[in-house]
Image (cartoon, rainbow, N blue to C red; front, top):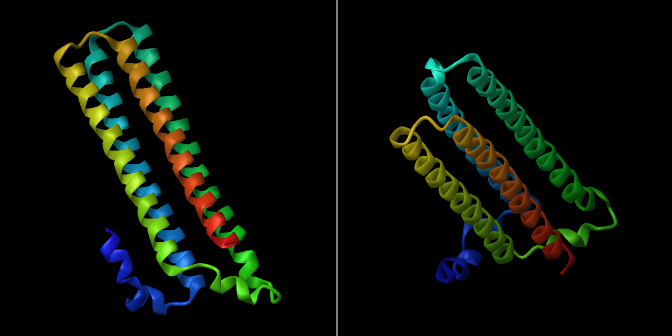
Length: 187
């Protein structure tokens, strides 16, 4: 990976203006975060549907728990996508203000393309790794659901914990990326 970063100054990335490099990196990270969030939320939704399918023969209290869990999952999905959208807008606005001011025309050259690329790639790797880990955990719980069965409260709790923990970790990764960009802009 370090060899790839040393060849960056000769690439098209170093020839593009720093503003476009910055916004391309931000867009790429937030698009991956949005896509990864969508993928995991869809898998969790299918996991919840499997629980509901197994609970179809139970009494109405279990069906009410399933409906309550589906409503909470929908709320988690809505809040996570809203948070990613607001985070993207806030990041773009925060980093575009220095570029729009006339007095800070030299701040555009503060970003080194290798450091920006390295920060973006590390964030992309972090998001992909965390998403993969949570997909594996969800698959393990799905396997346990199919083999053990008849444990609706445990699996309902597990699916909601998976969704909430993923959203919190994804939010931290995006916050960390923004913090790293801010540190780069201050150098």
